[in-house]
Length: 261
Ligand code: SAM
Image: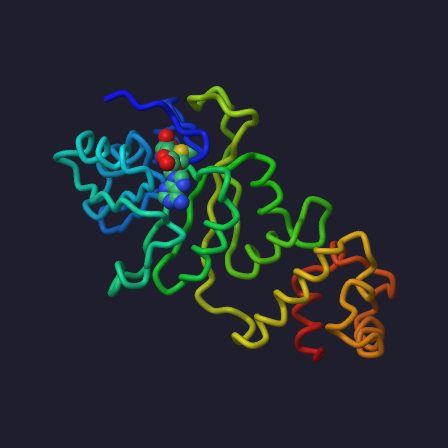
C-alpha cells in the first residue's frame, strides 16, 4: 500500500535505518518495559522497538496509516491504537500501568502540546524519548534563565530532567523537512517541589512574564503581584529591580511563589 505523506499531520518519516537503530539503542529497552509510541507512521521504528519488549502500544491518528500499521506489524507484539494523542484518555487505557516509556518522532505542528500533555502523567510515564526539530529541542532543554530558554523550558524543567542525546540530519527523513532534528530524553520527576495550588501560580507568573518578555518583570506581572511585594522579593534575593522574566531561573520563580503573591 503506498500512501502520500500528509503535510498537515507532520508526516516526515524517518527512513534512515542507521538512525532508527540508534534511537532504539538509546532507548535502552528491557524486556519488562512497556512502550507507547506516539505517531507510529508506517511502523518502521515500531517494528524495531517490538523486538525489544512484548508490551508495546503504537498510537497513530491517521486512519489509513493505522490500517497499514495493522498489516505491516502482523505477528509482532505491537498493539495499534488509532487515536489523537491529545484526546486519548491515557489514564483510563493504561489503568494499572506505571513506568511507561514513551517514544516518538513527533509531528512538528503539535510538539509543544504533546510534551505538555505527557508531562501531566508522572504516575504512568517514566521517560519520554522524542525526536523534534533541533531548534525546538535546544529551546526545551535550555536551562531556564539562559538566552535560548522560553516559557516551555521552565515547564519542562519543572516536571522533568531533560537530556539531549543526538542530532539527526534532515536528509534522514522523507519527505525531507526544512531543518535538522534532535533526539532527547525527558525523565519525569516523581516528586514535585510545589503543591497543585502553588504550581498554578508558578505557571501563571511564568506565562505572564514570557507573554511580554520585552517588558521588565515588574511591568509584565502588573495585576498579578503588587509592585511593593515584588520589590521586597527582589531585595530579599538580591535581584535587579529591572530584571526581565528570561533572566530568572526556575528556582527564582518558585521562590517568588513561596514568598507569596
Ligand atoms: N514514527 C514514524 C517515523 O518515525 O517515521 C512517523 C513520524 S511522523 C514525524 C509523525 C506521525 O505522527 C505521523 O504518522 C502522523 O500521522 C502522526 N500524528 C500526527 N498528529 C498526531 C496526533 N495528534 N496523535 C497521534 N499521531 C499523530
